Image: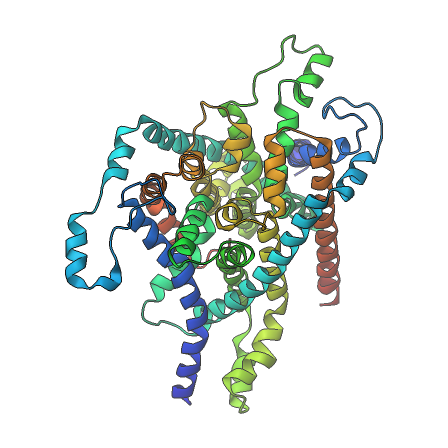
Length: 261
Length: 301
């Protein structure tokens, strides 16, 4: 329908401008020479240099990466098991409780999750710090991982699994050689999603953290509360760049796979 | 079929995620409920224990008599809490409505684009979801501030004389929520629209319906499920949102997430914060259950 071409293109233009203008402005102003974040005075990489010299920022970045890598690994394994149980085991007793516990954290306000986890750690006397953040992040990420992997298992062809079983493969062998390879793209997506959710989380980390375990979002948040600064723009741009590169790699891999298929 | 070993193995597979969630999700929520019924004291941890489960049944009954509803009474007596619940629901509802009005045309424009571009465009619309929430909210501070980029641009263009006061208002919070949650709304609407058969629209056109009529009696009703999914996915977390009202809102936008955060970290009144959380859960339980029902019936996020 060519009559709709112009309004359609205009909608796309306005929509994507709204989505991307703030991000582009943030990156552009990270190269601003001025400390005043909104007046452009010239190009400079000064703030990136300042960032690299900032040991607190570097330390927090490292903690965040470690928390994300570990919690995403736990979340992916638990999420995959949960997805398998939901998709392949049919009905079992208290299934509805399990389903509720998987789906509720997807939408539940983070403040409630954070508060409840902190009360748990206080009640059992666990020293708060690195490991409590890992546990907290693994808990909500595993629900996202379960949903992503479950969608893939639901769409997978069951006949291959049945054939393997008929040919004498046990449940473990069938899972390792048929189900898991088939679900691999979803497992990788689930890990990436869990990693990003952990890297990005401020609220749950703030509740579950203790002395000496300040994650990058916590560090950025306390800096942001003091106002806009080119240094925050610089660290934000680096994080955006890292995600952008990862998404690009994912998109290219996806395109190759689709072309090959 | 060898049912028995399979069943035992299945139980092992299920028990790992189940026990994890029982310990780190269900038990903590029960704890929140418990602490909301205890008295606030100046101590570490700052609440008086209500009952000790190990002390036996008799002690439990004894303790039940000393249960304190102070925190809930405080909630009712404190107009701050009541107003913050209303503000939260209002802001979340308004933001969700605006997000649907923005997301629907965008999703429709993407679906009606050339097939070769569709995947790329929906990827582009969802990509911001993968970037840091905190950073995207932060980006709006620089834009909306009194001496920010928006006012700067409008005044340079001569469109306004005085800077607009958007930052630290409810409007800034609404803008921030719409912006941050937009990918959550675009994707389900896109999925619903993409599944529609072109033949239905052609049939409507053949039967003499104009483009508007076709839209309102075919396209829109058939995509209602996507709209509802997107709205739930956004509305529920937005009610309890903390980061956006904290960074973009002013003192007049006291949303419940912020009040709870303050009670917890600044006033150190854990029972009050816990009671606040329980009431918030009670408010959200209907949309959460609705969301779960939809998801388990096979809708994809």
